[in-house]
Image (cartoon, rainbow, N blue to C red; front, side, top):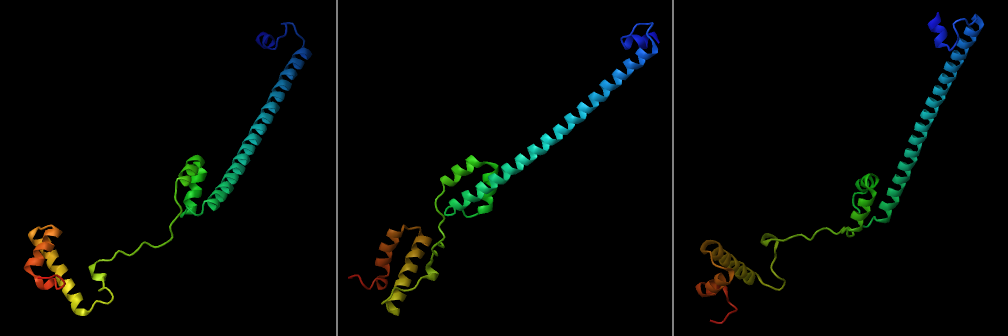
Length: 170
């Protein structure tokens, strides 16, 4: 019992009432500490909730800002959702990226024609078109088969097949 009295800060000959009051004081301090701990936990939970709300409001504000940014730069942006996502994740880089972009060209690319798609020029009769086509095929065959340059193939074709060059004087 002496050890308990010493722990309570009492003398060895302390009366029962003083022991009870010392124990009661310890119990009161413990209850007060529990209350303080509960208040601290509550405050911590409220702070976390407030942080989450602030983060949610900031996210909504950033998404709204992204919407405005995309609307403002609609001329250069084709995929609006991707740019919004990029804006939310990295605002500065997205602003720099969009600033460097050119306006989108909505015109379809011109069709590239090849010889099969070609037509004879207007005003050319069938015979002239046939001669022109034969001449071009002969020149292409010389380039492909004999390894001549196009200029050499044209010169060789003019001497080898003068019938393909009716407009030249012989």
